[in-house]
Length: 239
Ligand SMILES: Cc1cc2nc3c(=O)[nH]c(=O)nc-3n(C[C@H](O)[C@H](O)[C@H](O)COP(=O)(O)O)c2cc1C
Image 1: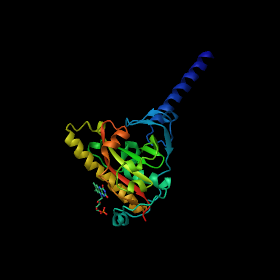
Image 2: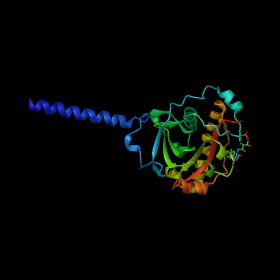
Image 3: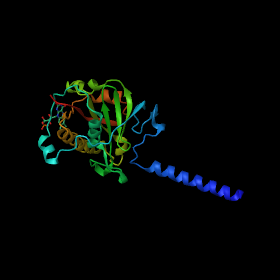
Image 4: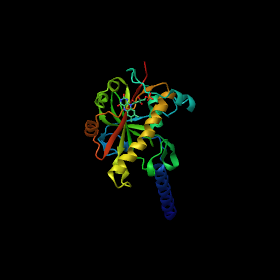
């Protein structure tokens, strides 16, 4: 009787362990593990994580046809201060760098040798957040309104949110020369930027790709160790 009890206990424990392992491997999981909240270091090696915001599923603002989005794609520099709804923020980030094939962990944008080198940051009035596409969450890396520090260009202070695309060179070691890493980071970044433009055209939002940004200050402020802020996109409603 005792042997049977021990056997049942062992089987139950093993089954529980396998379930937990399976849950851990599920890259598409939308749940936020409690171990990631408050003060843990993030994978990008930036600052400590103080807060996590769950994003809604990225569906809002996607109704436009590709033809209409291409026709409407344009730079709009006059951006109102009006807050952007979180469902549009979610769709914006997914369009920029979301996962579209969860099984293989592949994204809406291609990257040379599939290095997936970018960290996508969202700046808003509350702080700077790192976008985690696998979990569909934002992880705060720095508290406070730092939008105007991205660049002296006035649209950054006005737009409710800005996306900053950072190439993480730790993921580009397959390219031995710095010049090759720079080349592919720039090429790959173009896809992200164009997706932001097309989403904004689809959702009737205003944006501008900006290369003239405070790269050194951002690198220091965001705690970027081996990477480069490439482009920034202020986003919001146009006038
Ligand atoms: C790599 C890149 C960097 C850019 N940097 C800036 C910038 O710093 N400030 C700005 O106002 N516009 C910037 N632009 C926007 C261009 O000026 C704009 O795309 C161009 O005038 C064509 O207008 P369109 O986008 O409406 O077709 C940039 C565009 C690209 C592709």
